Length: 354
Ligand code: PHE
Image (tube, rainbow, N blue to C red; front, side):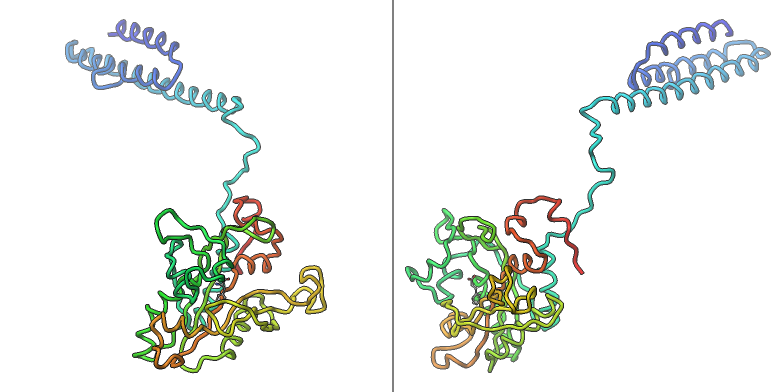
């Protein structure tokens, strides 16, 4: 037995010296330590030897077994260490310039502004609605009092899809009609006013520069009930803007043309940088154009199923189309609109919600 173990030990030492990776180490381990391996065979030989020699032989086998287990473990450590060192010294797989920790994700600045606005409007009783980015001609234009071939279509250079009648939404107003149908019944039967905001991505064929993008975000809002007037519009806009900018803002309305509102306005806020005195940010006018809005046109209310032709003023309402991208630029002082779509994480990850 002694000689047999000695011979096995020599064999083991020789084979172990040829092991160079984890795979060959495992092969050797199986050859010696598996159920049918050398050590198990030694054990079965034990049965054949005389009883008085068994104790000594058993102890020998056991210490041989413990010895090779230890040598396996040591070799494994050695191989792993060598592998690690090889990785560290090979330039392709080890980039010293990598940051120590992985970058934490953060919300896009437009998402932050959108969420903040959603919360403000929700606190004033508005529903927050979602709407698709692909719409049809009827919802994007006709239901908004912009008939086919009407010159007002030139205001928005639109992306039409190859599928007939389908286009990329050029403004969030495209959802107005659907929302009137969604909530109209509750308004007329239960007297629940329609109050909804619907943020969304919009697309227009713009020549891109620091102030224009072909992809941008708006947040539209409508409120419809009996006796809604321009005063309600001004109140909601002023409250919302004061909350967004965290200070009292002064607003003014100028006439503006949009076929789906009558009267239509451009809402300006007094420049927050110079308080109306005039500075480069407001092109020395003291005012910043922020939000087109107006009273919803009777034709739009009729096509939305709210009023009938016999009683075109039974319900009235206002609508506004806030430029979310523009608002995010102002709130965070971003000078170039392209920053939002370029996907540069260094620029985009600086913004945090309050
Ligand atoms: N949809 C208009 C635009 O994108 C903005 C608008 C919305 C104007 C609601 C008035 C009322 O240009």
